Length: 162
Ligand code: FES
Ligand code: FES
Image (cartoon, rainbow, N blue to C red):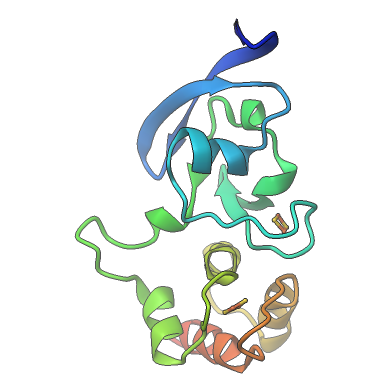
């Protein structure tokens, strides 16, 4: 532990999209802020900062969580996946990302990282989700632009893939 301006900071480390990362975090620091400000990983967006909009959704140890409701120190020793980890290392988009592009499932893109991570989580646990299961996940995210039709179409297409 060390102090910065009188505040205690703790050394933390975790696996981010397959690589080890570490840094210093005050106990109150949100994981979203640690990712964006300490690690420079700005793919995870921050909207409401109280668990409603879903923009900050990431996966921790294989489960979708709201990054704005998760403290950075809680991530110590865990496996964290963010939207930056979805594409191949050469930048090739994965099937869900390609479906979003094909179906115009984004406009401003602010909600997109969170939706991609929640749907990634759904497909990891339920490769062939029903319409109701997709709707349940998509309904947990606020999108001000698209009207959701493209998002649902993209998710349906991935759900129907062999
Ligand atoms: S920023 Fe986390 S749910 Fe809105
Ligand atoms: S694409 Fe703009 S908020 Fe969803």
